[in-house]
Image (cartoon, rainbow, N blue to C red):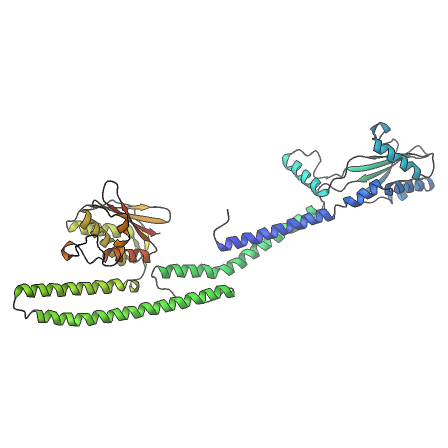
Length: 459
């Protein structure tokens, strides 16, 4: 499973690329150092016949072992033995036919020559894989420290002094000998490269981490400073675009706050004038009705301005105990004689705007008391989030109306009378506050009757 962070994925990609390149180089080296085609041509040709005949002539003329050993190469070794190394009974028909060909190259019919192929030539790559498999499974009968080579061809010729001239053709090492001398440098290179890759990737992606952090804070209504552009050009462009967006939104919010403050001030003046004029009305019933309507108009204007200014609250984020905040709200309602029960829970440290959250929870609990009589509040702590359940015993809300309840000036009670409810802004303000903290509000009907208002907040 791939890691989730960009930096981890980039580091993994670079390490995977390095591993694949080294593996391909290893395969190329193994194949290039195989030389199977050359050895096969020499074995099935006359190359080793000529070399054997040359060694026989040398020993008959010079008789020096030093001259004989001078003919040795990496694959071919000459030696003198008192006895033959294999017998005619051990030879195949192919070996017998090849032995007759060998005798034609010998300098004299007095010499008795024979040649035998001990093992077929395997491609070095497959032989190395078999060797590794045997080593890992413990089935290897070869001492890995010696890494002895196998004899693939051997010829023997009886000299005039009754000694046997032996020529042995060896295979390459099953496991390439150069690997042991390159493993340590490769490991050191991989470690250095990994450290360098981690440093470079962290340097490239750190501006993205800061951008994500500032965007998250800005989305929760916190005040942030502009991010200094750094890193690659593409990331710098993203940071500049974010700074521009942040500046424009801040200007729009400030302009809205000033405009609404002016509207609120301008509306209070005619309302005050209307209230003074209403005092001169002689009929008490008409006077009381006019003053009541003026009071309603003032409350509607103030609530509307407050709701419109939800994104411009100046309250700063701070750490506080969310459990204590909710418990204090429930205690306030209990002191007012309302049927609100809070189930005790452990302390929960939270960062946010406590005044705004207090208003949101107060609105939700008050709605529960108004429409469901009895309200029970409890907190559920889950991984990364906290759920605050506000359960009432009312009629609940049908699924079609759940989203409508969060619209401004919408109420569950359709009479629109001020005596049966508020202005219809409580749920809208509560959702606005919760969403500004990165959370959400869900409305779930309870099977036994009632509504469960679930406030979900990230910790």
